[in-house]
Image (cartoon, rainbow, N blue to C red):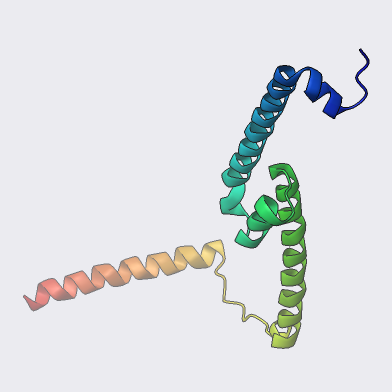
Length: 131
C-alpha cells in the first residue's frame, strides 16, 4: 500500500489522522493564547491602536509589537525635540540675560555678621530700657 496524499492517508488511517489534527489544533491554540497573553502583558505601554493591530489585523508577536512601538515613539521624540528647539528659537529666550547679584567676600561677610550682631544687641538693650 502506497499513500500519496492526505486524502489517502485519511482513508486508510482515519484515527491516526484525527489524532495528528487534534494535536496540531491544540498546539496552535496554545501558541495563540501565549501570543495574546504576551501582548496583553505589554499593552499598558503601547498605544491601543498598535495593540489591536498586533492582536487581530496584522498578527505579530509581543516582541514585534514592542519594536514597532519603539519605532513609533522614536519618531515622536524626534518631533518633540525639533518642536521644542523651534519654540525656544522663536521665544527669544536666548536674548534674556541674568542680572548678577552682589557677592560678598569673606571679610565683607564677617563685617556684615558683626554689624548684624551689634544691631541685635543694641535692639535688645533698647527694648529692655523701654520696659
